[in-house]
Length: 277
Image (tube, rainbow, N blue to C red; front, side):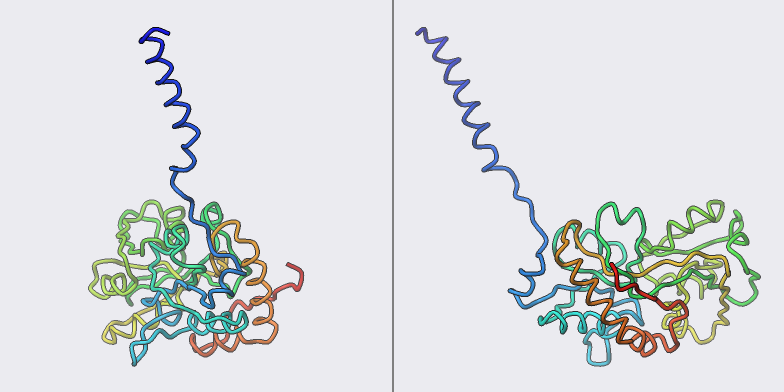
């Protein structure tokens, strides 16, 4: 065997060995914890938006409180584990799920067809509809009133209202911010004309600007959005169990009472969940 042939043979063997060993050196895929693993670990990692009252906020003792906190505690109790709350934002909640930093996410998690391409959803906890928030003096009664180049809208990145605004009010100017607190401040300072979002979420923010004469409009023809629990795609054992837990909490009126406790009113769009799911 000539030195040249030996050299080629060594090269071929090296390549073959590398190919066979490839799977050993390939990056590992992180898998979401299934129901059995969560129960075994004794902890359910829950993503909650603590800058979105009444869903989530820091209370007087700097501990999380709100509708989502109570719901997560109820679910963890039914599961026999402890809820571990991890702060998220509208923008990072799905990346946190994909990175398995959290098992489930709440925080006004409206199910949409786009989001369902990357994560799974449970049955709904409650429903919501979009409205228009502005300062007195504007005469906005319908979303069509906002579809004008002269209208300055403000919105929050990652919110479920954003695609609706972009699809239905493409002519309007749109300023995007990272939090509802900032968006409401911009409205109060007359740097924007209106915000389109779920009006039930806005009261805690508008109350921080008592000198402003706020007004809302709730167009009757708006489609409802359904707020669910988000979880990693394919985590079927956890999703099936969560659906049963949500049915139980609806059936025993726990969700209804928790909604009234934190929103200060009866759910305007009650969920009538079928026992077959």
